[in-house]
Amino acid sequence: DTGVSQDPRHKITKRGQNVTFRCDPISEHNRLYWYRQTLGQGPEFLTYFQNEAQLEKSRLLSDRFSAERPKGSFSTLEIQRTEQGDSAMYLCASSSWGQGNSNEQYFGPGTRLTVT
Amino acid sequence: GQNIDQPTEMTATEGAIVQINCTYQTSGFNGLFWYQQHAGEAPTFLSYNVLDGLEEKGRFSSFLSRSKGYSYLLLKELQMKDSASYLCAPMNTGFQKLVFGTGTRLLVSP
Image (cartoon, rainbow over all chains, first blue to last red; front, side):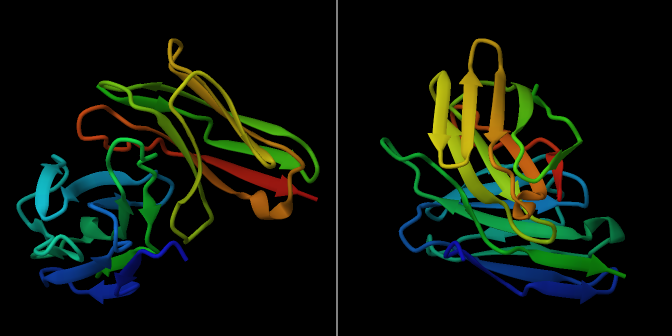
């Protein structure tokens, strides 16, 4: 257990439905990342926050995806109008960014999304 | 652009030594991470290199050559539980984003 938690662990939804995932990072970490991973591939970067500010979004993140970190603690990732291609493992990671830190990212257990 | 190259799969026997190579090209460089990922689980941190040379941590060591864009992960005294995917992830400068390769799936046999 790295100290990063994600909820739910599994989600099955029908195409066209909206889904929301939550990530609770390690409490003192100021950075929070979202990744998506499909079978046989490494994690692909989606977006990240430093405190409550969303600093970068991948081009992979279509308009149907939105992420928030309203108080600089937990984060949510919402997918609207889900498509079968959205089926993947969604991973959250957190790190303590700054001088003197290793910037190691600690990953949560992931949320596995299946769109039918 | 960003490109990471690792072998797709490797096999080794229990007790042996295996070296997993990684070459990378990234837009800026701020260190390289190695992660281990068992099937169906999240990646877990193994090592971080920011300077050239070898970092040793128990049975695992990691090497970096920044000028060559090359790193390797060395696993000694292999155990069955080392069967997993090993992900090479350079970190770019600026926003310090990790860029993961597809990973090397290592199978350790008795």
